[in-house]
Amino acid sequence: MEAIQRLLADLHRRRSIPRDTRLTAQQKARLRRVLQASDAAFDGATQKQIAEVLFRTGHLDRDEWQVSSARFAVSSLLREGRDLIAGGYRKLLRHQRRL
Image 1 (cartoon, rainbow, N blue to C red):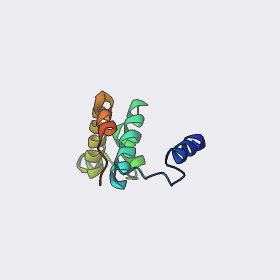
Image 2 (cartoon, helix red, strand yellow; image 1 turned 120 degrees about the horizontal axis):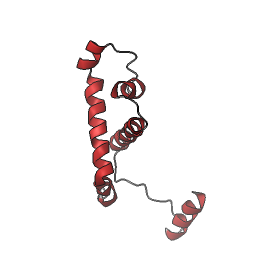
Image 3 (tube, rainbow, N blue to C red; image 1 turned 60 degrees about the horizontal axis):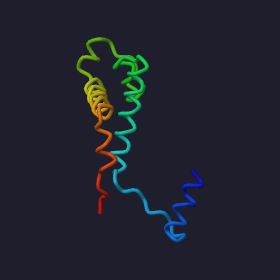
Image 4 (cartoon, one colour; image 1 turned 90 degrees about the vertical axis):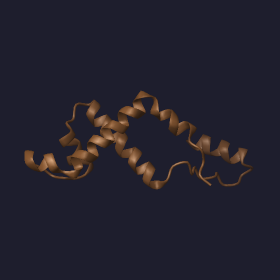
């Protein structure tokens, strides 16, 4: 990583390397959760287990889980993860820089 930093600094004539502004802090946080949820599901975790870790819901009984907002959030994260795996990651690579 340091070698890459040095190369980029040399390419930019020793100026500081411009910040990558393609994703907002909120988008980065969501993407991190998408990847965490997808990895957990791939490793065999249930949606309820994923929610307990990502959203710190604690143990929810069946009825609480059925109406929990965390249930719908995990479902959304996993859907987005499947989309990324199916090729949606290319959008991240093509994304235009914000001004």
